[in-house]
Length: 165
Image (cartoon, rainbow, N blue to C red; front, side, top):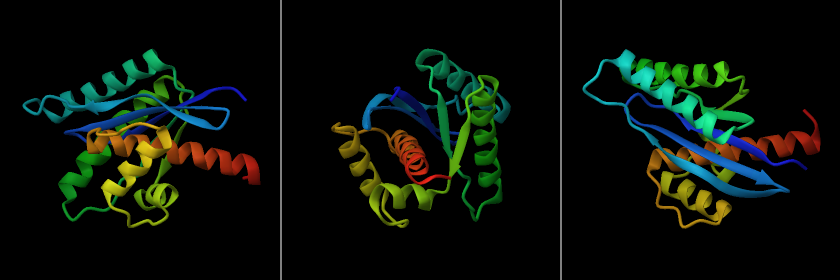
């Protein structure tokens, strides 16, 4: 089985988490993780361009074969939800321009796949991410969430491969 690198993205217009996870013979390992923090004193269009450019750079550096992103969740604040959707769009566009297929997952699906319950706390998800990657953790919440999204995608791929689509 060939190594597969997946880029997980936790979109946000103020802080966008990313995590790259490699699967090799069923073993997961951390490739890179962090946050993209656009300058907050800039316009939304500049911040979106910053996210796009940084994700393209990550793709060029690490050459992931696939990507996964968290679905936009419903928010009471429509303006925040719209900005989140626009940040997600910048991330999706960065992947599309580099011909990286992208899968989307709802937050409850990600939590359920990693922790066993769709209502898990962020700290529980972060703990499981560290356990699955054999790392100490301690990443920013957005970075940990992005790693969880990548791991969720790898688990989903494995499931589909074993049991068919």
